[in-house]
Each structure stands twice: as C-alpha cells, then as structure tokens.
Image (cartoon, rainbow, N blue to C red; front, side, top):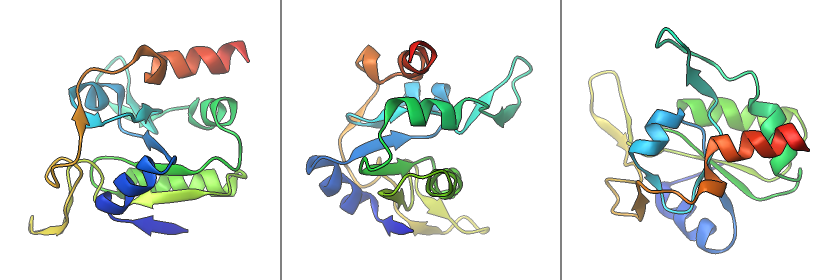
Length: 144
C-alpha cells in the first residue's frame, strides 16, 4: 500500500487524484481538504455513537472505477489506513493512504508525529459542492 504526506497528497490531487475523506459527515462539514469527496467509513448513529458505515464499500464501488487514483484521508490517519486496506482487498488498485489526515497524527503523549492538512496550510473548504457530499454519492449508489 502507498502512503503519502498531506503535502504529497495535495500535489497528487492537483495532478488528478481524488481525495476521499472518510471522516463522518459532521467532521467533513466542519472543514475538509478543498475538492474532497466524503464517503464516511464510520458514521454517527441515532444515539451519537460512531459505527461502521454499512454502505461504505457499496458507495465506493458505485462511484469510482477500480483503477481510479484515490487518496484516502481521515482525521489522523487510522480510519484512512483501515479504509485503504478494505478498498485494496475489494479490488481497488490505485489506493494511497494520506498520513496525518486532516488534523495530524499524534502519539499517546500528544506529540505531533505527522502534520495534518489544516496545519500544513493546504486549501480547506467548509462549503461543498452538493455533488461531493455523502448524501449525493449515496444517492448515486442507490440509483446505479
């Protein structure tokens, strides 16, 4: 599996790779890499608990061809690593995990291990074109 820093991810995105933010819809709405799409690996249920998104793979398969160049990012790098492994297992061939994610990776003591997208002064959005939201991508999967 490939791994890149947020700076390398930004360069790859500029060259045509698709940044898939696998954080929850609430996290995505609060701020995300510019031009990212949102397909949450985990989502908040009606009780406020984070649970596995049962539609993650179905939406990814409906929206992206198996050879699409995908950059998979989350908040700190753990969810994106899991999502990247799942995507490779289910036939995606050009998957890259974004180390540090949006907020940066820290060790158990809180020391920064890898800077995140926001702290690296890379382009961030809080408004999103409707076609890049999870609701739109889920609808696309439902009608495919």
